[in-house]
Image (cartoon, rainbow, N blue to C red; front, side):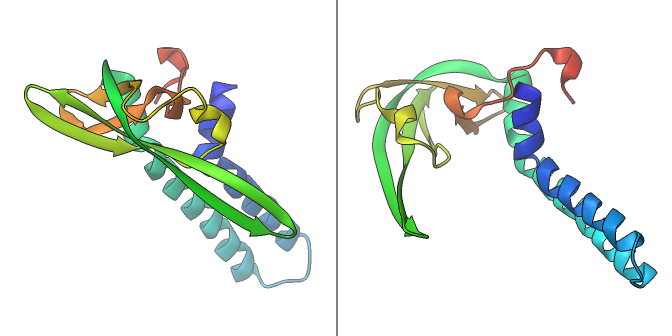
Length: 150
């Protein structure tokens, strides 16, 4: 499951869909350049996705756990296609060697933040070489053995 989460967070689904579109284009009477264009777009989307998860991979590989505190719980309500949804985000902070660092989680399902309270504790993971690079443990889906890592 963790490999699947890494794949989806790195744009693998988009890349796969665009690669499939390239295959479809190549089987029809469309210009060859269009197939190459769609293929290049697939590679570009995959690379952008990987760049997006590189900070999390770095923290996962060499990160250290630390207790922080919740400084805010943000809510975002949206409506679309007749559906209403609620997303939440946690803003947190921690102190290390007299310096305070802060960060924020990704937007997600409110059930993730149900047990958190402003001012309460939160488990964080930070990069010792760059403490400003910090993630909430629940935002690090990359819980795979080192053999499967990059």
